[in-house]
Length: 125
Image 1 (cartoon, rainbow, N blue to C red):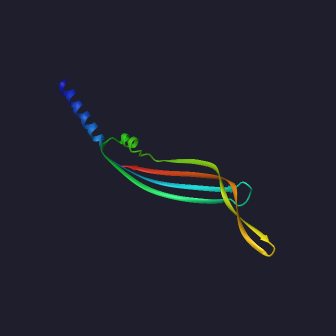
Image 2: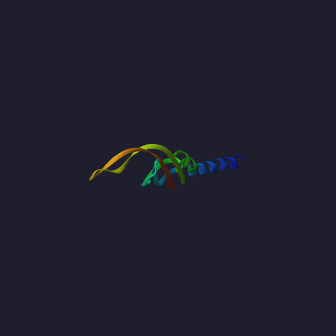
Image 3: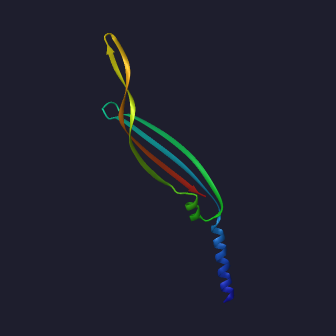
């Protein structure tokens, strides 16, 4: 009976040790930010799109797979967020006096909507 219990304990320890090993998490993030500005008094809306791609890698020694996912944030997924606010922009206007035509700028309120999408892909080795 002692031999069976000792064998089970040794086998269990070997399994536990084999699960905890050096692991590397490599993540690639692709972020797209789209900002649309619309003057409140009417007029042309403008859209600006920015892309940002990043890669990072984390290696931790003697860690289990589920711990690596939790502690190193080694999880794939998509996150989205939207930010709406109001700002003041400068709008170009054409003015004329007699025979002279000139450009003037006027400050007007505008609505801004910013949508952010982050797509994250992680590989655990």
